[in-house]
Amino acid sequence: MRKTVTDPRGLGVAYRTWALEHQALYRLMFGGAMAAYTECQPSPEVAAGAMAPLAEAVASAQSAGTLLQVPVEAVATAIWGQVHGLVSLELARVGPPETDWQSAYSAALDAMIRGWAA
Image (tube, rainbow, N blue to C red; front, side):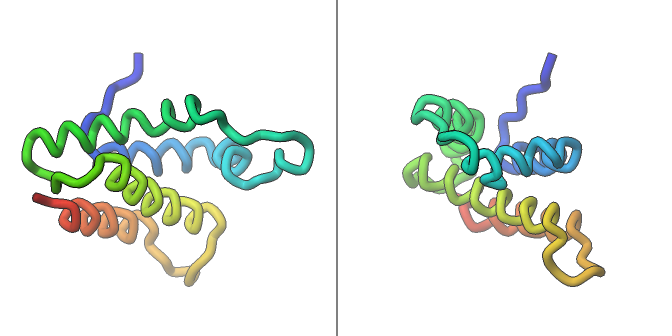
C-alpha cells in the first residue's frame, strides 16, 4: 500500500525520490524518445489524473489557509514545473560538478512554499 502525501512540499520530495529511484523510466516518460516511434501524447484525462494528487494537496493547503487563494491549476502547474525542472537537470547532470542537488532541491521547495504562502 502506498502512502498518500497531502502536502505540496511532501509531493515534491516524493517526485524527486521516485525519479532518482527510477531514472530510466523517468527519462522514457519525459525524454521524448518514444515520439520517434509512435504518437505518445497523454490524453487530457491521463494528464489530469497525473496532476490530481498535487492539485488536491494545493486545494487542501488553500482550504487550511496556508497557500494563497489563486487558481489551483496555476499553483500546481508552477510547482510541478519547478520540481520537474530541477529533477531533469539533476538527472541530465547539467550544472557544476560540485552541485549539491539535494540542498538545491530542498531550498527550491522551501522558496516555492514561501512564495505561495498565504
